[in-house]
Image (tube, rainbow, N blue to C red; front, side, top):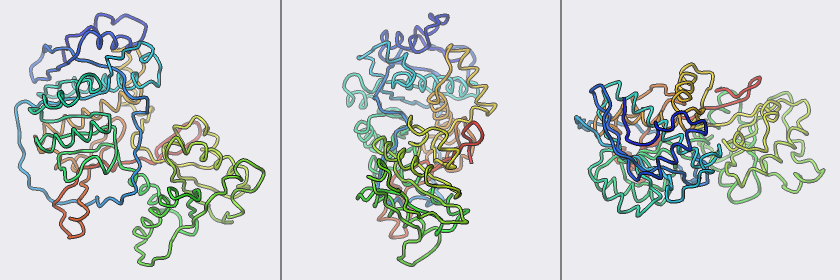
Length: 454
């Protein structure tokens, strides 16, 4: 049993929501420690700050045009550094200095999401303790006070999880490389955060991983002549489509410079008038496969208009549409589109609420906090279970063994791969690691009345 000296338990019967409880905890404290030990019974710990962070969604994906030289696996003989106690620092943007109760009560607020994440972490620590783990976890509000000073105080940590802020994460990655501390990034994905840094682990796949998953899935069952890349006549969309073409050439093992996939650049004006948008490009007697590489909130209007016109113009032709997570997250794109156009989306984190283990977790969470968990709670649980169990099993150099972990967690399995320095890869030397990246993605589609893994 994990014991934390705070005010959570004092308001256990309050019906107002566990988030308000966490808020009071945050205001009354500024640093939290949790002791996870092999011995039975509670362990004392000190309070910590907690609170909401940025307004953007936790699962925000960062775009990169760079081609990653990952998927290179080598036999690493780094010795295990097993310890009797491991220290983990968890940096979350609670922003306790800007506490507002309404931030926690809003279901999709950053405060609510990070509070869910934090509570998922706590449940994982209880589970790890029951399995004999010996961890000391310090929780830090990354958005309150001087960040650099807080970071310098963590030189004796074995692992630092976070922070969320991109600039803070870059500083943390450099700090961890210098001090040989594992830095885990559970929220940000970018090839520009860390360089030549074997201590940096990125749990969110890079943008190119999403594109790779889309084109690989499409080519498994369809020929290149059936596949259309859809975009605007802009430098950004042309760059995205060009990446798909290069990836398709690699998958098809073609050395020809010819582009294997069809490209179609939408006349944006046709999306808002009565003109035909797709100009009869459909392939008859075959399934038409449309790939949309657009991913950001700025692309949402374009994607909605494209799908709306496609549903109108498709007639009796068969369709499969591939898209990024924005299609699921969008308030504009209804599930009618998913059903009519057979939309497939790539997702880094997918919660199957019919899974018995997920059902059990949600029940336990509700009993403990008197609120249903957001997906962020499962994310926090999975992250701490993944990092904590591998740290205990393989010691301080556990990052080199993560690719062996094929366990199923509540949301997904992890597929951690080494990203090799581009110059090193060109020299056929796969020993120089840029960083570690999770490449696990799920393909999700609509079936009957719900989304399922394909």
